[in-house]
Image (tube, rainbow, N blue to C red):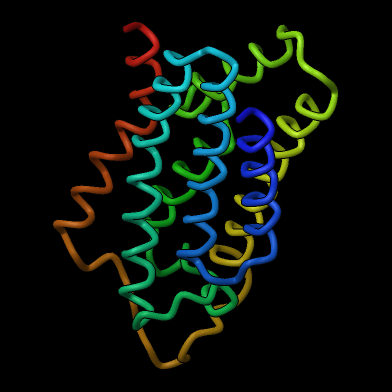
Length: 195
């Protein structure tokens, strides 16, 4: 189970680095995190796996909500090659999307840091072979790689969508939900670590 979880984590991260569909990248990131949870569960750390499940749910909900808002505003286009300079048109969605993506990477003091750093610390202190050890750290690097690739394609560069189309953060209900989930993604990991 440990090897299957690590290979799932590695292959999902590798596949997400070569994908151009926004929802597929986020789905593969969730699959990668599920592989991480299953692999740490197979090592006997069930509370740590549940802790990562909870922290992953916090920032993953925000990530899916931001992606849905971006896809809705781009007339259901999910190709990230069309999503240049979204930060100029949808600043709130861009901030929330980048914070949740950084939390997925394990940026210090965001929600994903508290569980992912603890998992990597447990892996470093466990008696496991080098294959599993390297799969954990390469998969973590692949997570950072596809997260920054997603940031580059969607936030930087020129807008490659229809030049006459204007899109913005027009839904107040989605914006309110994103702001609430943003605070949970920033502070939720610290609160959960006290439990």
